[in-house]
Amino acid sequence: MKHLILLLGIAILSMTFTACDEDAPIGDPSNGSIDASVYVAVGNSLTAGYQSGALFEEAQMYSFPNLIAQQIGTAEFVQPTIAYPGTGDLMLLQQIINGQPVITYNGANLAYPTNMTTHLKPYHNLGIPGSILADAIDTSDAVVRGTQRANPFYALVLRDQSVFGKSVLDQAIALQPTLMTFWFGCNDVFGYAASGGTRGTNIGVGGHPRGTMPTERAVFDEFIKKAFGLMKLSIPDAKVLVGNIPNVTKNPLFFTVPRKIPNPTNPEQMLDIYYHTSSDNVAAVGENDYVLLTAQAELLKGVGLHPNNPLPSQYVLDAAEVAIAEDAVEKFNMILEQEAAAHGYVLVDVNQLMSDLNSGGVKVAGETYTSNYITGGVFSLDGVHLMPRGNALVANYFIDAMNSAYGANIRMIAPNTVPGFTAPSGMGKRGVVPWRLSVDFPTDFHRIFGVQ
Image (cartoon, rainbow, N blue to C red; front, side):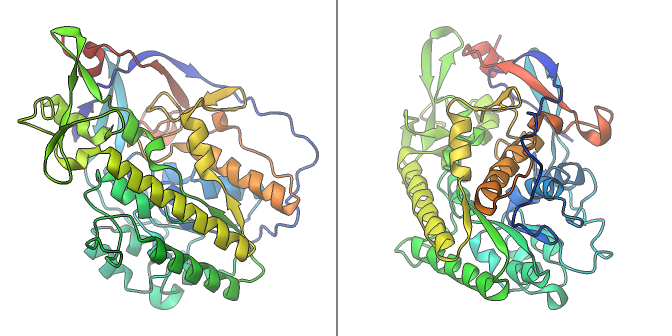
């Protein structure tokens, strides 16, 4: 089992327990024109309930689709439940040492859904961690695809394609949903950004080598048209909500690590961080570049603190790469908006939610949530995926859209009624601790890098 002390300037002040503080209901609850009998969710890890580096049942219980299913009264909403500690490399907040959170890595683990052989139809939550838009309509063998991409979730979620349907949408349609949420496309940008611009999902038709950029706009447009066309043809009466794509730099993976580091011998002096650019030059991190959270272990070893020992390119998303990612998000969201409207689907502006969290925060039931790492109460320990309270905020955005579009009065979720961080066994029921850390972020070198 691996351990990492996150020396990012986090000083723990207190652990505050929160009480239920949901606003009083206004009017009688109603689903309006929504038929909640069969709800199906398709998407990637954000749909699946993936959290802190793994997919496991305690987190899946609070996936945003499962929260929605509970709010609208869907009788059956089955997910591919994976027993703790799940599939992936689960991160756990163990303790606080000298004001620094200590993160435990459980180690790479592969576990199968506990209901893989007993649930004899497609899952209602068809979120596949690591999937891209193309996977919504890809009919290739899930086992082969998973092997090629080193991703076990294709086979774990899709299972017997010859019986349940070859693609994600085929399996979703087989259930004949009356309500559906569609949130694909994030990884068509995020794969590029999270690799510091070193990998991508493009197929190579736009002049750039395959696998080096975000998915091409024309390709994204083609796949959305095919996906929505198939859905409209096969389930014409289903009510469909489409989530758009957040700006990738709005999550803690990108903005938690500072761009400059105080000199331990002279705290008034700020030291540059150096990195290999995509053109294999060495440059200092600039004000419009982002040092990824994954770079921390390298920085603690001294990598990146001298031009002769720069960080590898995958640890920095530079300004030019940021522009590429932001351009892709803008174009993809335009496509999603246009095609959702053309097919009579409701667009859910999750991009706006993430922007609000990043600029001032979102206040719900007496608490303010932000995108800050650990302190914000939204993102899990991997700095990318949402903890249960973050999923509650996303669920509320979808619920608000349902209320507006379908004349419903579905109750919102008070995020402080669901758990905070996952934790080791014995620290809360089944590994989940229902509290949120209260912390601040000092700027001195001692707290950032633990230098005495």
